Amino acid sequence: MRPVSIPPPESLDAESVLDLQEHMRLPAPPRKGRAAPAANLLALADRYDAFILDGYGVINVGPEPIPGIGDAIRVLRAAGREVMVLTNGAGRPSRVTARRYARWGLDMPERLVVSSRDALEASLAAHPRPGRWGVMALPDSELDTLPVETALLEDDEAVYRQADGFIFIRSEGWSEARHRLMAEALRDSPRPVLVANPDVSAPYPDRRFSAEPGYWALRIEAETGVRCELYGKPFTPAFELALSRLDAARTRRERVAMVGDGLYTDILGGLAAGLGTVLVTDHGLLKGLDWETRAARTGIFPDHVVPEA
Image (cartoon, rainbow, N blue to C red; front, side, top):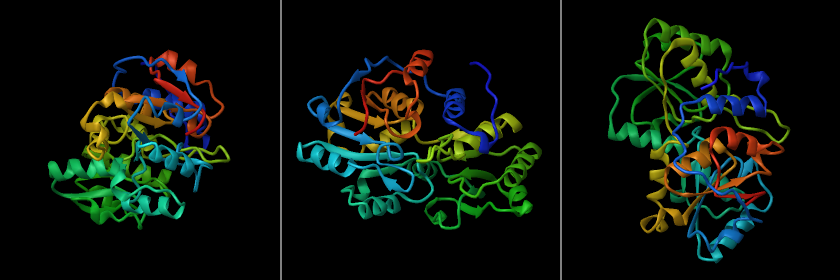
């Protein structure tokens, strides 16, 4: 893998984010999609029985839904197709995300919203981790859903020193000072680091790019040598959890499509899970970029390409 430098958070742009994503430990693509163009998801309704939509980049960009997404979901459902969401947004429980979708007028029941946080919580429930865990999150992140004892990571050095491990949930409000506290604590005493959201960044409508938990995980690995445990897309457990909610998944996986704006998360993860894949190009991270050059370099090609859902 070619070396990559990690820019400061304020310097992130689309190309640097893609470079960082490419640098993460990713599964190898098991096959190459044909990247066949289509007008929208309805044009693929004969090919697929169910559609798993990414959240950020397909449902919304920033705090508002993408125009037309509600109509797209209704039309697909009217055609007898299942529709659900699989998101790497881990900041709050999936029921909170489902309520936000409902406020936007989107018909997406709670059971059909799965997040990378759900994948982490399922893993912690199946394989209990003792001790007290420091959590990168905001005070309203409802940490009581995590099946471990938690302490919110803020500015008290003692919390970092005393934690038995760290969990990255949400990076809003995270700072270089807090990152230094964690890095110093890990260099002095290596401990597990669990990353509920492996996304490096999320683009905003004004083309600002946030530093998401995956960004800080890359920094931790580079600066301390601690290998983080990553949950969510593109890793298989998140997809298995989503598939368990779908009737269509009980038949043939190739009749289920993962729809997203991320080559390294949605498309790669969908391919690795044995699903069909649909890349959205007019919203989210790849908007205005040459995705084909990236695909050619990495070998990650979707089955279909649509401008929007």
